[in-house]
Length: 176
Image 1 (cartoon, rainbow, N blue to C red):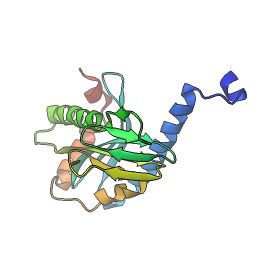
Image 2 (cartoon, rainbow, N blue to C red):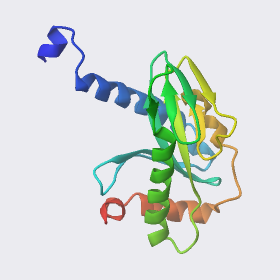
Image 3 (tube, rainbow, N blue to C red):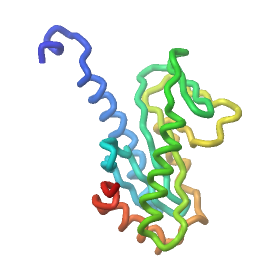
């Protein structure tokens, strides 16, 4: 409160900025529900972290990590990203690890292979560039996540509902 009155930056500012970005991406993902996609938000993990969004549909499962960097220039490489040319952040590596975690949890409860892909969505950026070799993580700006909508051929509608039923159970994610 004191920081706000003195117009000083606080850790709450970062939290609120991140929440706003997640809400914006959530609204974009909600638009895919009429096309057979299911969406979950803020899934708590056993290690204390969370999965920003989980998109489940005909094109598979997408573990979506949201990063908000208002007005920034972002470059994404194979394992890391740079914001405004600054120090590297392990966003791509973390997204891959999160997708592996999701694959492990869903694989424990589904009787079929569940394809899970990592996705990084940047919110509020001025520009977004991807390394020519960056194929391990799907990288989008918030308005581009609709590009996932036409993907198909990985899960049947019955499998989508089965994965969604498992993913909605909190205990599945909190089991170590």
